[in-house]
Length: 123
Image (cartoon, rainbow, N blue to C red):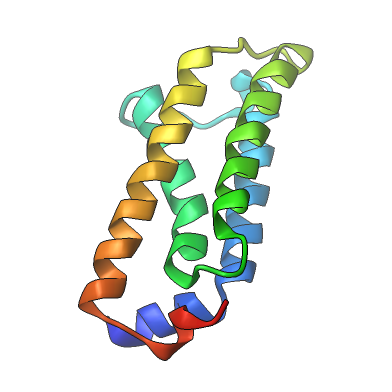
């Protein structure tokens, strides 16, 4: 577990860029091309944005709250762009995305308290 956390803290940027790329590709792809996945749509949004924000919240780089705010704003922009690619926008998705971001921040705080590291103190 500690090795995984250390790896996540060390490679937080790569993990975040990868997650963001996957979210953008899935969000801006016509829905007919997307695979069927079990679970509800809002749960998928919560999980995706929690995964996106978790490495940032775990590492806490300088200005990390602004990164979270950027993700929320980007989520809104995606909702505006989705009709252009044959998808329907749903503003409840934005709420689910924000929820995922907030849950990952809370989880990262708990983990950082349980498994402190000098790495997460760098700012």
